[in-house]
Image (tube, rainbow, N blue to C red; front, side):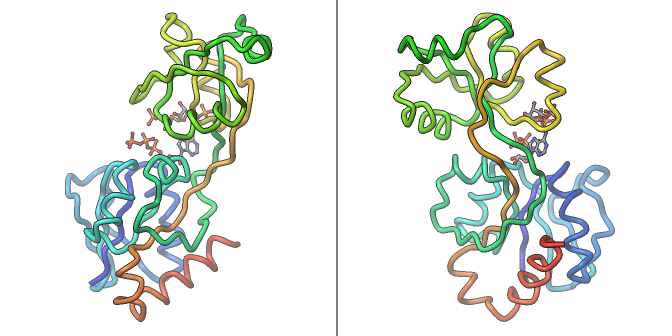
Length: 212
Ligand SMILES: Nc1ncnc2c1ncn2[C@@H]1O[C@H](COP(=O)(O)OP(=O)(O)OP(=O)(O)O)[C@@H](O)[C@H]1O
Ligand SMILES: O=P(O)(O)OC[C@H]1O[C@H](OP(=O)(O)OP(=O)(O)O)[C@H](O)[C@@H]1O
C-alpha cells in the first residue's frame, strides 16, 4: 500500500490531472467528504488529506510515503528526511515583499532602518533580509498577512502573490520578488528504497504529465 499526502483546495485540484495521467481516479472529493483518508481506483494507493504545511511532516516520519507540497512550505520545514525528485509545476505563484502604497521601501532598506516584517514564512523572510543585510523584526502570522501594514502591525509583509488581486484589494503593492514557487513531489527517504518498485511507475507518470 502507498500513501500520498496532499492538501485539499488548489493542490488537490491541480493534482487530479497528474493522478489521471497515472491512471488513478479518485471518486471522493475532499471538499465534499469529511473523510481524511480517501481511497483511489488503485487499491494500492490511498490519499491522506492534511493541512498544506503538515505535508512534509507526514512524509518525513513515514506516515505517508510521498506527498505534494509548495516550495514555500518545504523551505519552512527544512526538507529533513525528504527526497524531492520532481517539480510538478502546479500551484504556481511567487513569494514577494509587499507594502502599503505610501511606504518608501527602497529608502527604508537604503537607510538601514529596522524593518518590521509580518509573515507566515518566517525562515524564508529571515534568510532573504539577512542576505540583503537588512535588520528585521519578524512577526509571525498564520494568515491574512495583508492586514498587517494597514493597521500598523508591520512595515512590510512577505506573502504569496499570484494574480496580485489580493494585494490590490487591500491597497498594497509588490515591491520585491523573492522567488518563484511551485509544488514539488516529496518522497520519504526510507520508502524510496523499500517501496521503490511500487513508487517508480507513479513517479514516472507524474514527471511525464507535469512536463506537458
Ligand atoms: N494564490 C496562489 N496561487 C497559486 N498557488 C498558490 C497560491 N497561494 C498558495 N499557493 C500554493 O499552494 C499551496 C497550498 O495553498 P493553500 O492555500 O491550499 O494552503 P494554505 O492555506 O497556504 O496552507 P495551510 O492550510 O497549511 O495554512 C501553497 O503552499 C503555495 O505553494
Ligand atoms: O495574488 P492572488 O491571486 O490574489 O493570490 C494571493 C493570495 O493567495 C494566497 O491566499 P489563498 O487564496 O490561498 O488564501 P488562504 O491563504 O487564506 O488559503 C496568498 O496567501 C495570497 O493571499
